[in-house]
Length: 533
Ligand SMILES: Nc1ncnc2c1ncn2[C@@H]1O[C@H](COP(=O)(O)OP(=O)(O)OP(=O)(O)O)[C@@H](O)[C@H]1O
Ligand SMILES: [Mg+2]
Image (cartoon, rainbow, N blue to C red):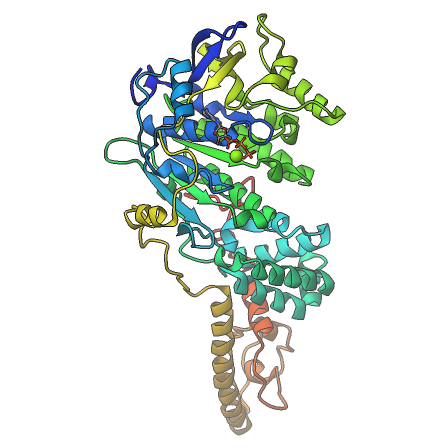
């Protein structure tokens, strides 16, 4: 067997066993069907992470970039060369992997908090209201208000980059809730307040790190090395998992970005990218139906963009049936079957396989050893193979975590070094709104001067102006046009008043409402911005 463990466009998974436990045959995952998605399930400690590791290794060697999350820190060893261990060597011999060679892989570490990897960020505008509402667990009324906030921002070219941008937008909405309600539907102050409080909580949880620029470019997780291997992007997720909703929303956003950015390519010889969704139950638990439907839609459609999505979770019941039905390549590790719910899970798992007359699936699932799994992959014409009891191959990279020093060394030679490590604070909604307020105040001052002068002038000449002309300001049209001169006397003021941010935005909104269509942001299935339009 070759070191790359890829033969004829297939990725080596391990070897199946006959009923008497003797060697049966090698088991493969056909790269041609790598974009037909997959599922790795099993109880804790049964071998899911190692399976993810060997799949990532195989894809990388085949030139396919991989994105995965390292939930417990034990996947990081994929960046280091493997080491001889008796039990690994034994496994290699059992499955006929000879020679069993060690290898290190091109890994890019990422981290939302910038501690164990390069910073990953996105902007509020990019994430969109659907995912943000999910992230903040909003009520329907709050989500309605958030949608209006995005609509206002999208239509008015106000980039919502970070948390303070959305805060500024919400502050404006609170002060203008009546006017906005008339224009867009109910904008209740209490909903706005609830979102504002939610944003504070997010901030405390460290999400401020995540929202801002420079935003992650999808091209950076789709890199290949000079020798043709796919980069393995490993997202440090141990700290992130303390906020499971942020974790799940982040991965959904990634999926959404991939979907919106990548072109259709049909069914390629091998995937363009493989995306592992570990702890996938977090994605679906308590998710509203609309979100599940959209995820289902994205998973179905992303296939023809060459992206394979592999869900990793303990229990196959964690994944909704509509999504489960689309996962072609399956690796089922052992499950316990003591409680009725566990038994149901085993039954569901057993029934999803194309049966093998040599053994009973239900029974096999409960008896599988560590690093052993029921395996069925898509074969010719995309038909699932007959399920086989399979010993999964040992990894070529290190089993278990790497040290901090090793991680630093990997990061120091990373191709994205320096690209994301510093925050960029370009003008966004917060700054633009602040600036517009200042500008407006300056303009106001100028107008006031002009008014004084004009009125003086009028007093002198008693000249009439034509009705309805010359009014730049919308407010002027409402004025009595016969009164002269319309421009300058419509808003007699008792004194100078600084125009509020709210007024500024409202005017901007009113002015651009008609002409905004061409600039308006178009959002995709999961609410990410549609690119390249
Ligand atoms: N293919 C394999 N070859 C050799 N040993 C394996 C293999 N798979 C698993 N093991 C052994 O089993 C241990 C547990 O595997 P792993 O960490 O993958 O389990 P897991 O299902 O991810 O557990 P958890 O749910 O706790 O994350 C490994 O540390 C390793 O010792
Ligand atoms: Mg694990």
